[in-house]
Amino acid sequence: MTPLMILGAVVFELRHNLSGTTFEGDTDFAEHKVLGGSSLYEHMTLGERERTIKGTTFPMDPDYGSAAAVVAALDAMREAGQPQHLMRGDGASLGWHLITKVKAEGEHLAHHGVPHKLDFLVSLTQCDAPPVTGFASIIADFFL
Image 1: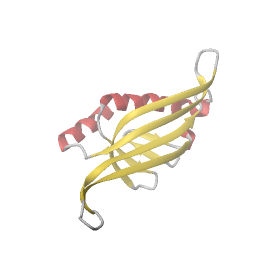
Image 2 (image 1 turned 90 degrees about the horizontal axis):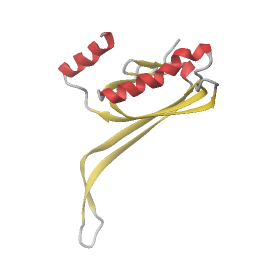
Image 3 (image 1 turned 120 degrees about the horizontal axis):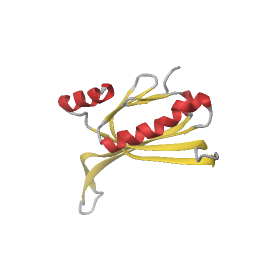
Image 4 (image 1 turned 135 degrees about the vertical axis):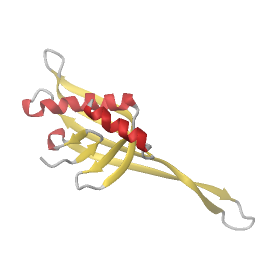
């Protein structure tokens, strides 16, 4: 199956029902007032670059069983605090990101508490690539 998006070791496929992504980027400027004229703006730095990934999965459906574990994996990645590489399904690199928030909302709980439908939202903040030694430890974590 073709991936829609890949974040670190998590591959989002059609069964995760990604419903959308958002991107928001800021740029900081210094404003210089000019007597009798329009203000001049000096480019200072790039501000925050944030993304969200939204999706829905169905933990009770056998075809989606492993998809329910995706939310737990994303939360574990958030707790680890390591930068994760984000890539779109067409191979376009979207850069390195920190997972800042994982939100899951379950609906229609079964008798044992597992929801039939699970909506999830992952908030990301773009960051610099990890140093080579940090990158090696991230890759090693996948295999240990």
